[in-house]
Length: 461
Image (cartoon, rainbow, N blue to C red; front, side, top):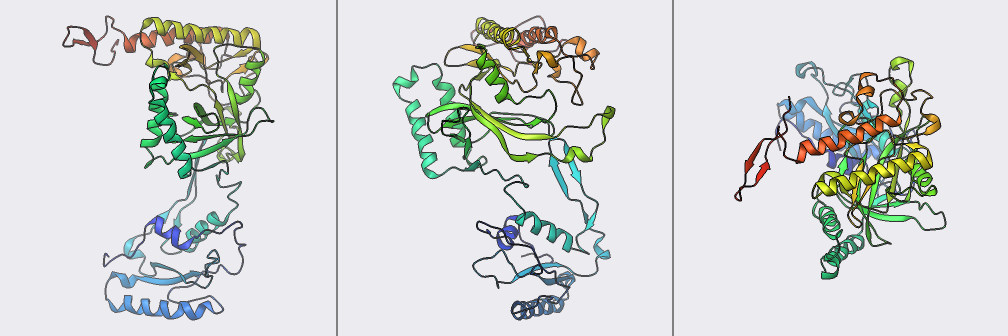
């Protein structure tokens, strides 16, 4: 141990100080009392246990004639969360004096959400450690079920669950499975889940079935396959998920829905598309809002353009088809066919269901590996026909910038129209051509067979 500092890791701190409460957390009261330097303030039988320990350690620290003498041992509380032995000492080693010698040690508490980060004022945790200790204590004993991000619909997968996934992996390697076009995609998805357990533990997720008469859909997920790059916004994550009941690979999407007029969760949109028999779109099988998880950061933000940032709510859903990204197409023919399918799905959604997508991009067109067809996905920014000219309900413009129409980019307050989505399809094809096909701006070289291949980024500037 370093002679100047006596510390424990964060993991050790929480495992020692905040043990599991069982079914119900303790009620905060007079039992949680802060001590004072080199003394014990607790009443009752616990004092007889704390005081000799504190006195002995503090005498030792002073006798060392080192900087450790600047520390003191304090009784933090009577450890009410320790159900097995409520009298077990709960002590904290902290810097007790000579604070100016080391400078003012200030910290700021932060809360990160989809709208940004809330930051507290400065807290001098060396001079007054009580606020931080109280904060962590209240955080742990708070109502985790509703207010601190606890998600009862997600649990760690059991060994039996993981074994079921491994069995499915072996099934995909059989000769009969290898004959199917979708097998390589599914096998890669399962392999990624199993091989990344160290950093992305496998979890079991339960979602309510779209058919209320059917049991919930229970899936296994691991490392996400796609995610938003932005620390704010919808916070989207997509997963290849293994359906334990159906023994198949499905797609799970998790994001935060804006609670504003004219904003619709994708489960609602997919149900409306299904009722209108719209083709070339995914089929939702389960999902819904995750408890009562809402953002609150927006309540403390400035209001740009006199518009209040909207609250976001946690949402997830599952679709039956797990698909390839558009950029994995095999050749020009498949690219044109897949985009054509997506365009047809877009047309039917507009003409049959009165829904405009408003976020057409390379990420919203997927390839169904089983059927070889294109699907148009990501309907979370769509609007219904009668909502298009009602004015903006959120700050900022919908869409993916590289694929947005020139008119929308030049006039950001212009209402979204059908022609803007159609222009995005053109930009999507152009982008795929610039990225993956030879043209006059390509940087190329020849492989061993004399075939020209692209080796560098496109530079048309």
